[in-house]
Length: 311
Image (cartoon, rainbow, N blue to C red):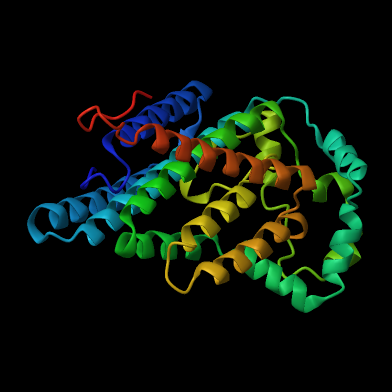
């Protein structure tokens, strides 16, 4: 859906169509069965948002509602497509690089086990980090609805950055797969009793293992897990959320603080290595810089009758 150029444009939707087609072809090539009720729900809800958005754009003249509906549909569909591709990527089964990442952490002076112990020694801190780590869905809703009301151009940019960083993370993870710090370091089970979520950092292992050993045969899009360790997509999202929340009145500083905690929580709650966090943040910042550069190039050049500078 394209509504006055402020939600993802037709070109971005076309890119999503290509990615979705690739995901469908890859799943078919694997011979996996797919939970059709999940697919029907995703398509149905997305179509409903698209229809509502189109109706408000054409007949009710409400750009905010139209933009929010378009962004929500794009979020649902892009998440489903990219999550499916992440499963395909893990099934490639390249050698794990956890040992290399652990060595890089050590070379940087970061002791993951000591960090985890320090967090779990403070139950209130572990609880705060858990809440921050799982704040993504709520932050998506605040960003989409808030930007639809106050800055629809920023909303369009946020959705582009979300999809672009997710795609980059998926591609990089295929070349550099890792099981995660909880699996590699295998901390004392008695220590893990202090985790607010007993499966922290290990939710993905059932599907991750099945994908790598070839026993995975059924894809339920509604039940997919975050499989990617490197780069940390939670960290990338933290950067994008903080940038977006700065556009909303009264939420800028709170957004920076919340996402700062969320990024730190990826280490102890998400089971990421420090290099995962640095890579995820770097990808997000690079995507923001690329978008800003493209926007600068597209500014009308003086003396050319309002034509955009060639990209």
